[in-house]
Amino acid sequence: MKVFGIDPGSERTGFGCVDSDGRRHRLVRCGAVRVEAASPFPERLGVIYRALADEIDRCRPDCVAIENLFYSTNVRSALKLGHARGVAMLAAVERGVPVIEYTPAEIKRAVVGYGRAEKSQVQQMVKLLLGLDRVPSPHDAADALAVAICHLHQSGGLAGTVNGAAIPSCRAKGPAAPGSWRRYRPPTR
Amino acid sequence: MKVFGIDPGSERTGFGCVDSDGRRHRLVRCGAVRVEAASPFPERLGVIYRALADEIDRCRPDCVAIENLFYSTNVRSALKLGHARGVAMLAAVERGVPVIEYTPAEIKRAVVGYGRAEKSQVQQMVKLLLGLDRVPSPHDAADALAVAICHLHQSGGLAGTVNGAAIPSCRAKGPAAPGSWRRYRPPTR
Image 1 (tube, rainbow over the protein chains, first blue to last red):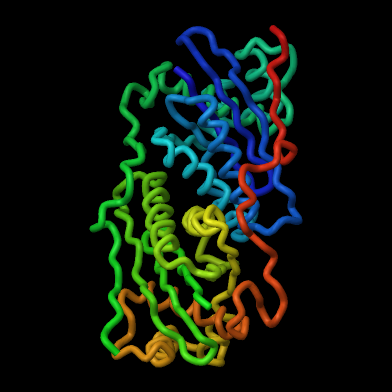
Image 2 (cartoon, each protein chain N blue to C red):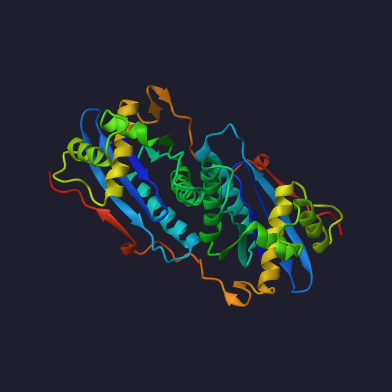
């Protein structure tokens, strides 16, 4: 089972793919998409989307696990983060890959065994579980790998399941059915 | 000049395209993308993206104008709205169409002449300016048309400009340059 983890951010989005045979985990590839803060915001979203789409195409994961946040320092930064998360999830959905979300506490609990673990503890466990000689850098990549490992631990190594239950399918179903949105016809003038 | 307006939302996203010769505005088409609240969130983003991408392909606008929000009732709803806005903007960016953002006050000022106008006043002005016999329905479509008209008024009918100044180009530049994100190579085990 191959899981692609994403740690979204409006300036840096970490990604990391982990392959597992159910006993041992192996790092496939990881990294971070950095966008220039000076470039127009819509263009930054395009860079994040295309980079992740490209990585998902290369890795061909069974599912994508993404960090979920329900809090933020303020509404403005929550809005910005939402944009990045939206295009990151879309990169998976458009490729027919199921997406599953985990809160930071769930990730820490699944990787370190303690929901309030320090970031550095999580990164050390990522290094240990993947048999690496150092913590993956940049730290966003290590965080993304932790999300992927979280899903492996939560699902017992079964793609598309969490604690044995099937993940609601997010497979792309082709163009949206005509009934799913309404068009307004201009009245005669 | 043809402008495609978007009023984003996580459950309903309005869209509306307006064509103008600099004196008279004409409604091209409008409507709203509705997503089932019961369907998985990533799938809902896919529906919004594909519906808007399809509409942009049909309308072939010179630019996309989208409502910008810097406030929200709470962080959770800001995050949700951010996702919808992110995929809406991406639909334009991926088609090489410039995106420009306007705050609700800017839209009201440009359409009604008063930044604190009521929603119903904005909708009546949309009906009047487009020469329609009724307010476009659903109201999200009317709101999206107001964003498009706002850009027409702000830019003086010139695509890709606001108050005479060029909009920073958001044209898609093909795949992101390799230097724009870093990949981490697994160390030897």
